[in-house]
Length: 183
Image: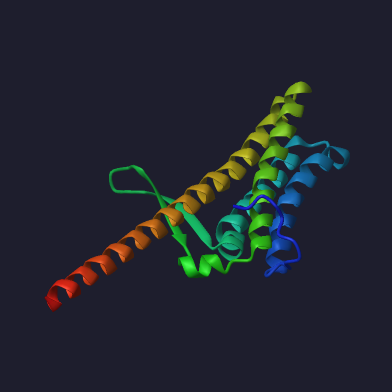
């Protein structure tokens, strides 16, 4: 992940980037502005969590695939254990991913979590435990995507390294075999 924005490169998927940011901004903006328009905590809770859940789904199933070529999910196996599953594009396709799209994806993923943490601290300072519950749910959804995509990225790198090692070893052994078969 390159933390410096690539200069002069355009977004390859501007609509996906827009919706990636829009869903995050909508849940944060609604939560921040809702007290101006609603007196009901239930409405604020339900709408904010619904918007954060939509953001979670869009990031996990749409923008993660398109912007960084990664997808993750979690299953419970027959023994009742949690098993992480990862998908990624092949290394050649990953190398062609747009750097600006990737930069936007990762930065907004982390900045959203930071914003929810800040709002949680603000709720603590104001002694608003009920609003801390809203922030906690939204932060949990945000952190789940961060953890999932970070593990997925590490798994993709590990798979590429294993593939490269196997390819080199295979070429080396076939080279040795052909060298000894000549003798």
